[in-house]
Image (cartoon, rainbow, N blue to C red; front, side, top):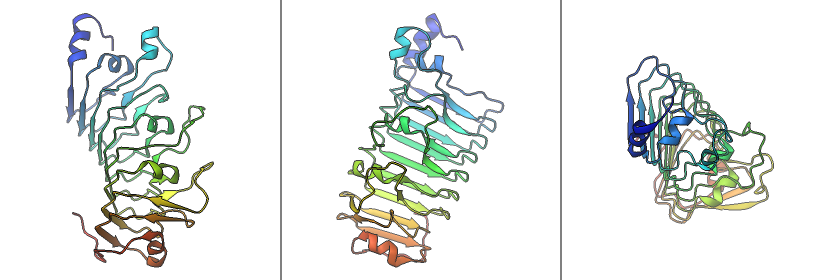
Length: 278
């Protein structure tokens, strides 16, 4: 899509985009359009049956020197995707030059073909993310894709310093949530809710080359609510979790509670054998 003149000025002022109940729709945000949306703050896309990608990011070094330096789309704070049965990826193309530095709220619901959410390089540009909600993504296997696909060395571990809420529901193929290298950054995490993820093995896993592979304590100083379903281990066996602020602990479908409680250094204030949505 070419963007020129008055149209370009209009797009620079645009803050909110909602796309709902569209049939044969192409990716709504190609790279050239994203460059014009300098003040875009909120995107909601629902009930688009044929949509396969949302953001087409383009190549990192195309066009003018101004385009090379432009972080895309750094103003976005809210992204909600709902009932997109053909969606295969949220961001298509190289992500190493992209910045979602203002994104605070990410809500994903009923994305039947989505297998991953973030690339390792994209995770480096999410310093403001506060809420991550994932529901009914039946093919989702990874929150962070293990291989970036861009043949680029990622110097720093993934980091979510502002993350307060993680909610994952009805994601039957999800095996792990985060690499354990993410855990030192989760100092502001207040709620973690994971249920009906029947293939879940661990919340935190040790990835290849992970520096945090020795015996260690994972500290979550602000976590006050932990709800888990069908997960034998919170992290790899040589880790324990320190949860000094925990007020509510809800557990369901655990066959080896001894393993789980050995890792959770808490006194349970609430225990549920019959887990229910809340």
